Image (cartoon, rainbow, N blue to C red; front, side, top):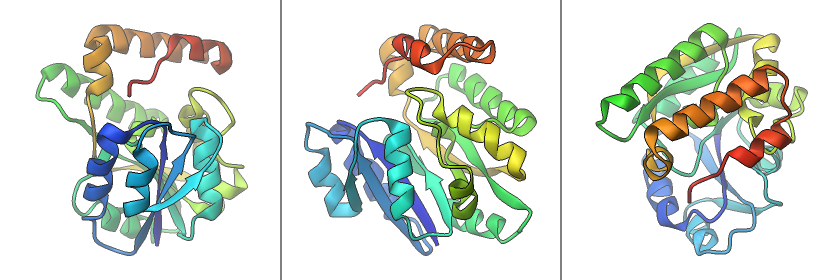
Length: 224
């Protein structure tokens, strides 16, 4: 079984749409929403569709807490504004039957027809294939036993997905599946496509040169 984990905070405008789409998936799975103290109506929505946990705020903290409660042999982490292509869960289940594979991600599709997003998708897929570094909005999945062995996501305010996938790739074989995870373009649209992408790139480069995520978090803002 797959445990789908969504960390949320004040996601009322988009959460019901996401959860309704998840409930259309086939196969044995559960959905766990880890709420980090939302002050909107998101918790009430989540409780109608999923098992809902109250946790301290912080994406890594929220995901780790939900993983502790998960019943599935495989964990799939999604953002609150992401949804799955039909058959995605079945593809993950089939892939995880191969014992050599310990995890991976899906192929990202950003919900916009603008050609700029096709470039972002292609560069993200190339990074995942060549470097085995995954972003959270690519739908990271992993064997629960491996997740537990690695201690879950590092307790960082930012870039916990890269920190985790760096450790994951050292543990065994990871893959990127052709099944798609669709992601809202809201962050790029609100802050500006080029500005948001350049800011993200600068953060990644600074992280690569040793900058602390705690300091880099000041330059990153979620859009809700």
